[in-house]
Image 1 (cartoon, chains in turn yellow, green):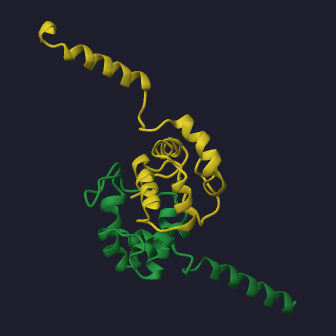
Image 2 (cartoon, chains in turn purple, orange; image 1 turned 30 degrees about the vertical axis):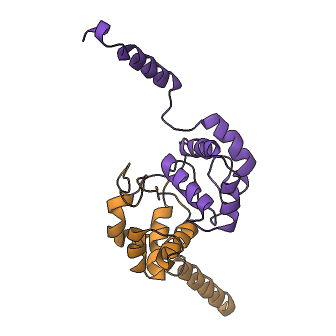
Image 3 (tube, chains in turn purple, blue; image 1 turned 90 degrees about the vertical axis):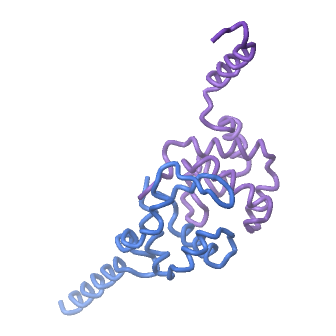
Length: 114
Length: 107
């Protein structure tokens, strides 16, 4: 590979370094998500998504993109729930990504079960 | 003595009744009914393809009551999802309770 003929290589390496340094396996920011969850989600879902009340779904360890899908559906009304509709309405897209990352990153939580 | 024996009998009957399959769901029965679930929910990282692409939710360790609620919503159409609607439509209330009990045993 001729480096002189491929200026894009420099940008690729820079982007790769940035991606690696983020260390992100998640789209959202877990720490920001933890803070937002403590404001909005904790009452029903617990601080880490392991809630005792069986009326509300346990979120800890759930797939990040599934949590996002559900939040989007609550916000759009595709899923109708008066409480979750209001909750989702108060979250920005970034908030949603962050809380999804926070709950998804919990190591004690839901599992894929056969 | 007779009264104690009668009470003991009653208590033991009630205790055994609590363990029998009822609306609360029987996990062992649920395990036998989950053939339609494994294909999506039993494969780590499995994603839906239609209408949107996203990860199929993990069920292991989820609250049984919530799973029953969700299945009911898929059955009624309150939650719109073609595959889940078709699957839930084929489940009785007992099926839903049993499956929910099975999947609630997780982490």
